Length: 215
Image: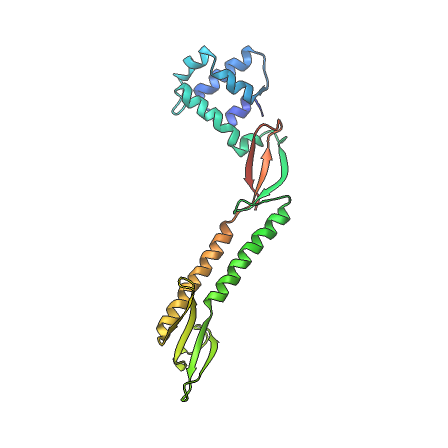
């Protein structure tokens, strides 16, 4: 990764550090300099140690300066600054899976959350029970938002915490269960909205790589 004085200024280096870098670039007749070589060189320069004492907040020690310089290699705007970075054909989904195209990553994400919604739909089913005089029962799927639950004698649904069916005569309990499941669906929707896809970006030298959100 190459650097220039303008690069350091745009990355937000403090005034004290910039003054030192400007003097060093000028004294050595440099317009650009390799980032990694410069980072290694900084520790060994006595004048750098002296200049550090005059740096701004966070850069007023050698350790502070070096930490700021170290963190540059993980900043997308630094790696992509000159526009000569490499956009790898490697994409990472929210669950850590790697894919060779954005389309494949998007399809994986879609399938993951589609499966979660299918599983949720199955566990959300509420069966309304009619009891006949002879003791026989008839079950039918009910929707608390649409059906009048007072017309049923009991309700049955699958309890995912026990793995067994849960039965109750309380329609209020059935309504509460349905409301809880609606919240679960909302959490799935929120998780999908937050499940970003990142692309691997490498600097022009191939030394440093980062993941940049692309969708």
